[in-house]
Amino acid sequence: MNMDDKTYKKYVEKRATKSNLSADCARAFLIGGFICTLGQGLFDIYTMLGMSEDNVKALVPVSLVFLAALLTSLNVFDNIAKFAGAGTLVPITGFANAVVSPALDTKAEGFILGVGAKIFTVAGPVILYGTLASTIYGIILYVVRYF
Amino acid sequence: MDKILDYIWAFAIGGGLCVIAQILIDKTKLTPARILVLYVVAGVILTGIGLYGPLVDFAGCGATVPLTGFGYSLAEGVKKAIDERGLIGALTGGLTATSAGVTAAMVFAWLAAVLFKGKPKG
Image (cartoon, chains in turn yellow, red):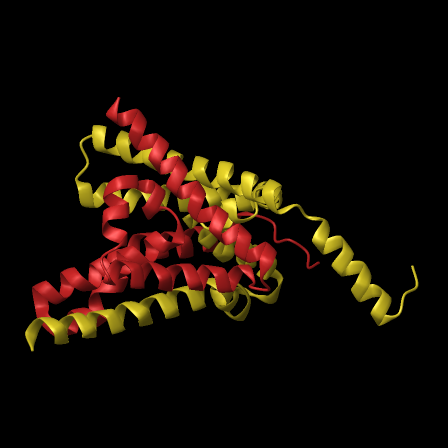
């Protein structure tokens, strides 16, 4: 198809607005809700097995990260994500996918500057700004509490 | 019966947090990476002003599994570390509390790169 920039832009916008907000939201709600419920199920199972609360709290995200990593490696995660949108992005599965997916994509670029560097393309900003915000929170908390 | 309610609220709150992100994706030009950053920082702020803790008590994994819950863990970790060791806790608490998830993501990603065939670009 031959198009100039303007026509192409119009074409893209037309296609973009076609995605239906309420249908997108319904799918995000169902899949996102399901993943959180799965987490709750794991939480209860690990608690029933007699694990300490701290260990359960660590093991639930680890389990979900493992599942997301496995599904990403098997090329299944992308298909679910296409359907679920924010439903797979927002739970910790989205974070895991953002780490594993570039690891697979950049294998050809080597294990140092490929895999080693690129796994942090999305996870890096998340960890940086999350840690930064929590440090600022800590300083405020300390100042308010002790002065 | 209480157990069933736990699951319903985990589903509803977790799903609801995803819907907010879906609206942001559809209605604004925010990329998924920006939304993840926004969610983590929002989680820290909401925990700091005392709103997210009650949501976690109420919705369990519906509040902790979404990325806002990652922010909650960071903030709670900092708070606990400050109680235990003073100001240095602001630097140690966050990553300590979230180390399991972050380390698991790194380890599994590396193993995936070793064990699975890399995808060709594009």
